[in-house]
Image 1 (cartoon, rainbow, N blue to C red):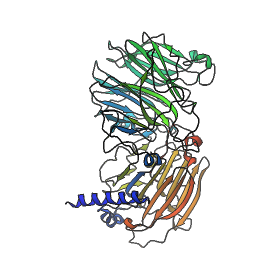
Image 2 (cartoon, rainbow, N blue to C red; image 1 turned 90 degrees about the vertical axis):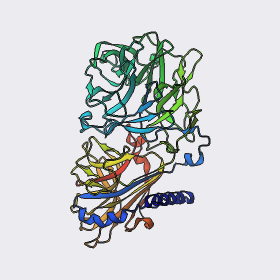
Image 3 (cartoon, one colour; image 1 turned 60 degrees about the vertical axis):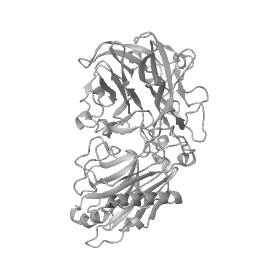
Image 4 (cartoon, helix red, strand yellow; image 1 turned 120 degrees about the horizontal axis):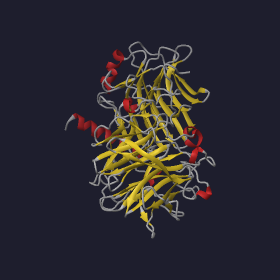
Length: 593
């Protein structure tokens, strides 16, 4: 048996034993750890932090208490963590593609592929080049790229993604190969508002439907919006003709509904269906449906609207809230499914995961309208799709992911803010480590900090890393960052104290700056010491615990509590607002205050 296979068996055994015993996972050591330690001192510069690995482990109770039984069962959400505003399309040949919002994170718009709607694999990002995502600096975390809409045009065998950059307007990109590169943005200066989507009719004619202002720009109340339509020329890639308002206010205009948005159009059985979200993206969120005989309307709302919501159900165990912003797809077998966003709050009513991607089968009313829920029906957390076998590696449930930074490019789960940050990190300066420069940018600024992060995807989780860093100035700091937005963060950082000694500090960042919540002084290092520091965050859902270790060999590391019982709700949407969830990652700066 090869050394690599023996190592893999060893690593798997360590994880299994830890899970069975219900203990916190110890740091898993790869064989080249010692080599990293021996070469680090020569490669370490005064303003660079090196990270050996990153380990993330989901530990949510629901998955533990409700194991999947049959091979055709799967969990909702299918994409946990803030994969919001999902859109889906198919080429009619057994390929399904799904994309979600990314706001000001880079790369933009993660793209997933599936053959069966259950087993999804990320194949890349639609917006993965900086020339596709210019103008994000200066925008807050919940600005940037809103609600991408995927569609496939069988007439020219081209895939389209249309979206809004709230700082720079609407645009479309396209490709004939969704596994490859997408075009540069094609700007749509005549399309206002947000949430555009493309509809291709049977005759090849294309249309854009989108959310926009109230008629004449004169709203009757806050949240008064419209859904509009205009033609799109696929040969010249531009809008043509005048726009028309299809829906004013919403499904029941007499009730003054708010924020009709996220429109999609479909032709089913010779009829045109216009589907939109209503009620805002919070707990009043819902989805409504209209039907007409032409893309230009008139459209009549279904009397059974909304076709999806959880707003009337109140609190209950394992509740799902904020359900809406849906998109429909027909399978090769002829049935219909929907993807949509929703949230999973804890019993206390907050969550740090953001708006996640859920999926449900579509039912049809006696009078021919599609719907997902009616009355007090709940969005299920466990579903079944007959004839589909669940893969051994899934996007849902409790999973463990470790990155030893052995590749020359970051994995697709990693993100940076507002640009690629390619000048701020390296995977080749020391192969097998991620190096982060202490950039003169703070995570509180609307710029690009030296932050490499991933989504938090579970209420209960733990993550850990090992860092080598020698701060040389009072402003330099590096470590693990829990980040919701510019003013809601927890940062476990190694930096210099005023007397020049090294310290580990847990910082809480708010609108008025950062406050030290806990501090531990580290022993003075000898000149030849690599000063590796292990860092671990354990989330219990309602609270976080922060640990550190100075043990050189991490296999048997002794973890010391830096701060326990730290309020997790501080990073929640309920407190901080915004459209994203929490991310966690490695961060370095020379502007720590």
